[in-house]
Image (cartoon, rainbow, N blue to C red; front, top):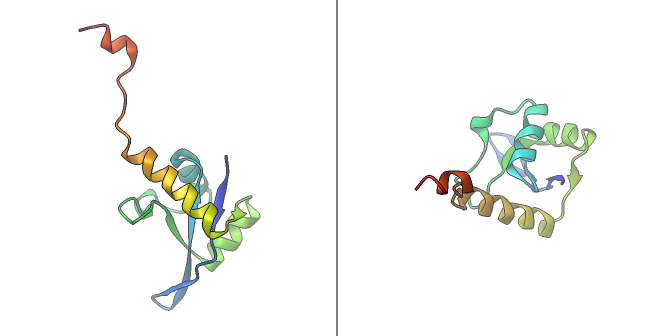
Length: 99
């Protein structure tokens, strides 16, 4: 499992922003919490799930062990996250036997 940051540097509100993604949503939220991010900031309805982070937060993320992700790595993680979030939850076998 890994956490990645891109180097998008999108200018918004006078600051430069990048994206934080991970191999799983659980890992992404845990890592974001270490960075001081609020769960409500998670961009789950965007074209791909991610956290927007400033360049300062990006530098902290790299120090905490995030990898600098290239476009392919970030998109691959984002697709996995989107699949994970949109996949219907399965019913545990023990609940199925009740019917």
